Length: 317
Image (tube, rainbow, N blue to C red; front, side, top):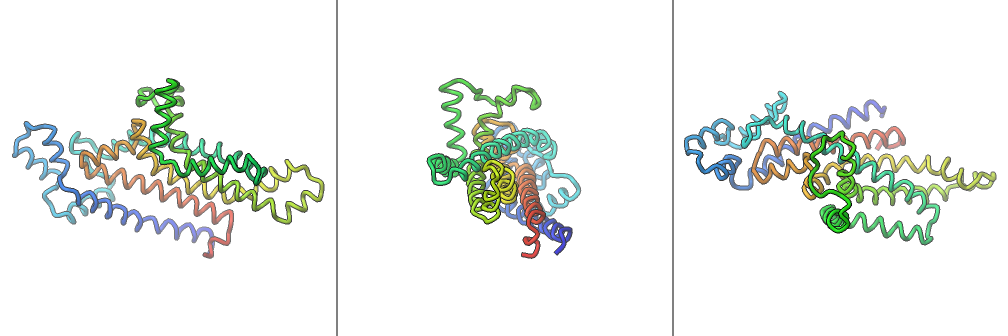
């Protein structure tokens, strides 16, 4: 199978997956009792029954569920993701406002994971079965096992409240301001720790496997310095699996942002999603869920393509 055909096949799979995500999300939202108008009425007791009925009619909440879903789907295909009933703002506007915050947090977490994982994985492989390897293994297992929300709360408790080194409140500066790096540090470490741990173990295993191969023995027999053997020959081959896994981990960073943003009060898509669930804002829930789904699917698509480019045998599986 050619690379172009492989990519086309993977891209075509995106559409049924997104359709399934939207159907399941829509069904789950409607399982719970109540709707966004109930929330608006609860917050504004002065709203008359006539105004409540007008709101339900305007947003189609009296229609059958299948009709509501079809109306939403047709709107999405036309670029209209619906409106937030409580504020009467377009869902696309809310997503556009929150997206840069989530992207910045995701990039920080991803860079943190790679910067920590690659050198630590190399060190653990070179020092296999020594003290450094055991310590790195313990840290990696701890990082994978610790839940994001618990790690975030501990970082706030120690770094912000006890040592008073980092701000606790949500950022008020523009995203491009230099001080934003300070605000990004704790949530970025929280969201990147699990990925760094996973990537470190993959790096260590891949390096250790490569170092046992015959070409490494031959390179050593030629008298090449160990540093050259490791960094020039072993590392290059080991990065194939690490690169593909790093792309897959992007998906976990995107999904993990929902919890981390809520813990740190970070004004991104994840926090907006939790707020939308609390307020039963159906269109906003569907819009953000669909957007996160697209991001995760694209991350996996990039991983698949990278894998197919680096290892052509995968195209024939």
